[in-house]
Amino acid sequence: MHKNGIGLFSSFCLIVSITICGCSSDSSSSNTDPKENPTVGTTEENPYEISSAEDLIQLASDVNSCKSYAGVYFKMTADIVLNEGNASEWGTTPPTNIWVPIGKKVDITACPFSGTFDGDGHTISGLYFNDTNAYAGLFGVVYGGTIKNMGLINSYINARYAVGSIVGYNFESIVENVYSEGSVSATSQYVGGLVGVNIHGSIIQESYNSGTVNGSFTAGGIAGSNNGSEIKNVFNKGNVSASKINVGGIVGENTQGATITNCYFIATIVNGDSTENAGNIVGTNASTATVANCYYDNFISTLADSLAEGKSTSEMKVSGFVQTLNNGTDVWKWVSTKNGGYPSFSWME
Image (cartoon, rainbow, N blue to C red):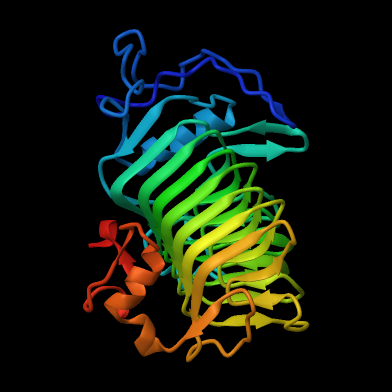
């Protein structure tokens, strides 16, 4: 482990509707004695450094032993490669290293990640997970945490349900300034390009997906389910498919007062049964949930949609469309040579 390696564990135990594992102050798995670095990880300016696959694996091991790291800061200092090779071939020829998601839930007991993970603009590539378990992604379960400023590329994730490339189950947490370019799928429900289940006041913002998303039902380009939470300033350019119902370009199911604002979709939707619960933005939108200021490219998707406005490709590739998305803010940017001419974010430049 490097000079700011993982070693400090917060003793703050979290109790939610599921039982959280008992906390432990044991730091035997660490290569750094917390007594020697008592302030490391306690502030954003002095985080634990994650610079290798070994560091990332150690973090997963610690969290899955119920060290939540509540209030602790981590920062990537380099791009990390978990496997070499082409992820598109891993469905039939798996790579050597199998990922274990950071944070888990088994039956009614959960060991979530509750700290802040800052990718600092770096990428993680070569992530492979193919199992019948639920709660899968780079992070399996996050509660009261923040995941930001990172990209997941060249990845293959397949699990049962609550599956997302970045987070499987996002509870009272924030996911921002992230992107995924890998494949994510679920044999059952709740699969999203970034987050499987976004629930209980969670936020996904200023992020995008360009990888394929496949599920049995409740599949979305950004999140499978958005439940009592907020998704804003996002876009998806990855195809989304579901063999049954509830498939959306942004969210499969939007419910319990959830909101989706300032978004766009520029890919295709495939629904195996019908188009009754399929939409360019949302597959199923509850009466208590809202969708506002969202758009889709009607040259790419011919699916009719009452919750979003269809625009031509040329209408979406102009500065005026950025002003529409910004809706009085300064989140979206437009550079004709970036993102294929579609609106993007400042951090993408």
